[in-house]
Length: 416
Image (tube, rainbow, N blue to C red; front, top):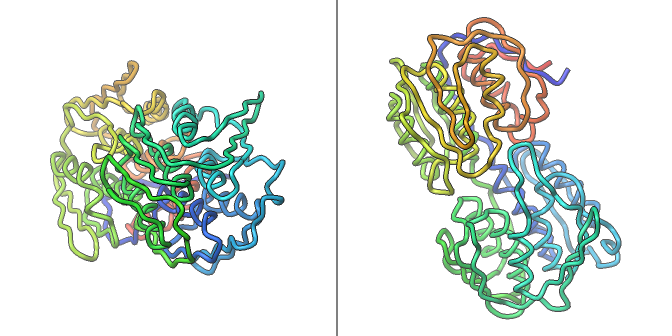
């Protein structure tokens, strides 16, 4: 039935383990295509986006196998002949194969990723950057072909620190001739993970974690074993869940150092947080406070992926909260579904004004994208009565088993 059924209204207690990062593993899988050897990727989450990327890599000639949470990618025998005339199609994250395919083969034909339900996400920033490295773009009605007789290092300044464009430049640059200097690069932990993977495979990259990356192209890459870091957005989802319900939970393997903006906000709202080498303890014993103003921003700012879970929690916070969305123009789609549950939310362009109500009531709601779906599950945990969240498939793109994790925390929740 593609749904999740929740009987909410109770505080959360217990422990759950945080899965490997969706946003880190996908570019690492793309990077494995550059390595004419075997890559072993550990702590790989079992999510549908990973499964789709596996299928894309298999389609272009890689051998991909899985044992538990370990993924093996053998890209030794992929040839140009196997990809000639084929287009890389499917999910949005297939776009990160652009730089990898150019680096390995010098050409790729792709469908235009187009928009998504949370924003337009134009690809011009990707193409403009790659053109500075000698890539020519041939555009058709539904596809485009990117080609380079020889990728050449260049000085590139991104107009916006786009995560996807930063990833594609890195992937192309490690196989280019000469040095690439990428300015205004994204600083998200997922970029650091990609650089660490490539460095472990033999790439020379300086400035990891900062706004300027210097990449020495042409280094021979070798097989590597790499562990994917834990997912900061999944950890943030469960952190905010206990803010919504109250209780005491422990998030094992939570990447605390990557969650500073979330933790700061959680403390301001009334949480007591304690970090250790094993994870994060969160205690919420009193009513949560409203947030006068918070805006989403690039890392290390408050992540746009956490905006929907935050909105769900603020729907019952004492007072009026304001959220400004600065990354995607249509990320308030969940507000209408929350209003069915009794929330009072007014949206106007980039801002949402949330007036906290005493309680939410369970009903049938519809997920419209990944993080909004997670936000509705949080709302279901908070609400009195039964909530049914339809379109579970959106949530499964990024959460390995959200029902299992909430069951670990004492929630009465099942899939249908």
